[in-house]
Image (cartoon, rainbow, N blue to C red):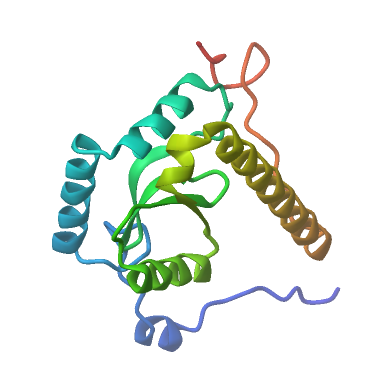
Length: 181
């Protein structure tokens, strides 16, 4: 009979290596609680005192049925506040107002794109004058983003064939109760 090999932990390596500290706030962005609280307060103030272009686009989003692709107003993403954010798509909308600091906006966009969030810039004048063209352009960007995400998921699945995921069962046969809408 052959001897079975078993996996054992090295007690010396386990004691010397410490687990990294959990990040309680900032969702992995390593932002201090004080800075994050200040960003949320600033976003709250921006929601209270929105521009006309922002209010018009927010009204269109509120009236539209976009399924699971919803846009949150003045969302805190990392250390930036974006005008609208769709978390499911990894898409942020930035409304360009008159007299805005473009270098600061470009730096923020670059940092968001570095972590996989696509930024779409829209001029406030375009929203107020030709809303239909803006919505058509946004729809196309959303479709492109959905395709990018699906292609990335297919590539990941092809690269990791042994990794499986099944959704939790719900309903009569499953362990969880059915959804109530």
